[in-house]
Length: 426
Ligand SMILES: Nc1ncnc2c1ncn2[C@@H]1O[C@H](COP(=O)(O)OP(=O)(O)OP(=O)(O)O)[C@@H](O)[C@H]1O
Ligand SMILES: [Mg+2]
Image (tube, rainbow, N blue to C red; front, side, top):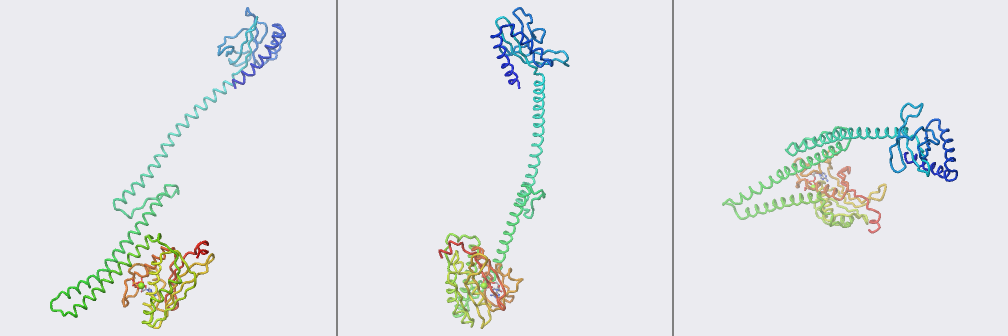
């Protein structure tokens, strides 16, 4: 604003200098007198004095006591008549050959505005700083206290209080999200640990019986007055027991491996139709022995990406169950086909029998490790077959469904429909 004032003064002086050049000191004096007369409000000041200091023309009585800013630039305060107080002016002086000229403008209002602005900015910044500091302090205290809560809880959990959970305040902010995520993680860890404990208990329980049987048999064999034929029989039975134990361990290892998902690197395209035919051939003799009709329905090109050995093992377990639990004269069907879904057809593996089936409320339970539903345990087995099928299904992102075959059990494995490109390849 000051620069603007100076520029207008400068422009006016430019004009006055030209007048002086053309008209001389008296001409200039006349113009100054006119302009001064027009200034009723005293917004501009004009003053022309001669070498002696006598006023030639202007609306100021005497040259003011001015503070020289830079060359020819002055600032001064006077109290014009009718004004309520001193007003500040900004002006320029020009030295002419035989006179001095002053042109000044009232900048009081502008200076007041400036002072007001400076004060406002200063006060505003100060308040902002104070509130900023207070706000920052409160915020950080609040955040630290919430982190502290989480810290305290995790410490308690580390000290062994595994059932403890971080309190969720219900504000739905990031801290709440963090707390509920941590809680969900703890929940899952606890569940996994419970599962592990259960499995360990089951293993211990299920292996103790065959192991103690094995030991007592060997103790009998060690007795002196035993004939070689009996000793041989005992040893053969022991070998059978040991084989059973090894089979159990192998089944547990396969389940663990399927659950860990480590096989994914060695995945290949597996034709479920061929798999069904192979297993049907493999189990034909056993089925015939039990007078069960074992048939295979294999559609062409039912292909999934997967681990061939694991899929075969799953199908073997299902066929084994179907034959084992079906009464003589029953009928077992192994089927590989496509399930018509909304999108592309999904590969489907189905094993159905005409046995007693599994009641709906026990179907989930039957999938657990070491669970055998047959209370008198008249059939051999240790309850790992369906667990492996379940693990293989999860490994292959397939859904395992146990349904009623009316009569009998119908187990189906529905795989995800393959992406379009792969179908074309196949
Ligand atoms: N096809 C079926 N019909 C009737 N019941 C079945 C059938 N398949 C499984 N079950 C029931 O589910 C239980 C669990 O089956 P699973 O295959 O896991 O174990 P298992 O056959 O008893 O032993 P394993 O398979 O380890 O030799 C079985 O004990 C049986 O009671
Ligand atoms: Mg089984």
